[in-house]
Image 1: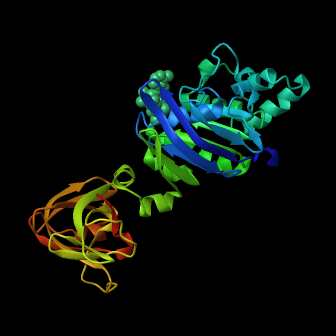
Image 2 (image 1 turned 60 degrees about the vertical axis):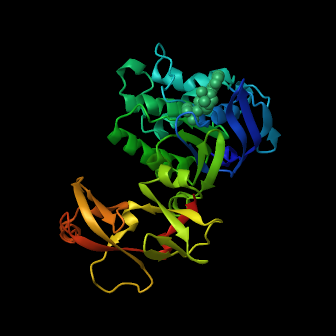
Image 3 (image 1 turned 135 degrees about the vertical axis):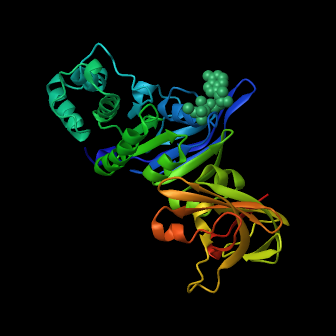
Length: 359
Ligand SMILES: Nc1ncnc2c1ncn2[C@@H]1O[C@H](COP(=O)(O)OP(=O)(O)O)[C@@H](O)[C@H]1O
Ligand SMILES: [Mg+2]
């Protein structure tokens, strides 16, 4: 599939109201040609509504959608050059794999002589070459999802929309498909907008992740930026495994947590009462070895150690009783460093990892 598939998308102040319910509240978002953007948020945050506005199934109450040079805000779905994959596949059960994949070609009145090659190419993309005559009932869940993908790609759309396409699959297959989809995206070069409520999935697959909450776009960033620099407590607690701790301002680049002063490498938000957002794996048990002299140190008492296979979760309490938790890799060396419950320990936190958000 070719460079024609590379078109950017611009959502401009899109809003959607259903009576009193504000499903989407003034969302603006520019997606670059060939970019993979995930819409991430809890249930009811407006992800499907935003995807529907892109696909033409939902009319925005206000705002506009542009694809490339074209304002498509009021174009019907079949007049948009967009491929769509849903969670429940939405395949036609009475048609063969080949007929399912050819369906968009038929609907778009593409010359019949071209179908067979296009279908074969699309099936090859999803590693189902030769499956044309199979019935849908003869396929596993993962294979059905691939057929749905092939059908979305067969007409080389400018834009592919996916609404939780892997959520019906079991964990192992879901993770395999995440990696495959990511590869497929690189190969196709198509612009993809992908809805998920699974933060790990969003981080794994996307060039950028847009976090939605109550119909609003809270933050859009690369996975690394989102994880390392969440803009508020919601993003920090939704991504990863952050603990939020009450802190107060202690100068321009430091906060006070109980009796301890912690320095941060990042500008502090306004206000005196703030929140420290710390991901479990960014707290490191102080092994007494050579350390960067700039790290923050916290003393605490171990309260509980949970073995979780590939890693261990350590719960601890600061002097004033504040609970913190950290994660250690499951290897023997790392495990030896974990003190017994009841013991005191010192943990370090790099100022780069000392993230403070508004309270
Ligand atoms: N057709 C509709 N009629 C009324 N309310 C709706 C409709 N579709 C969505 N909503 C409401 O809009 C909000 C966002 O829904 P949705 O976009 O489906 O969220 P998500 O996909 O993030 O779970 C929810 O509060 C939902 O109940
Ligand atoms: Mg949804």
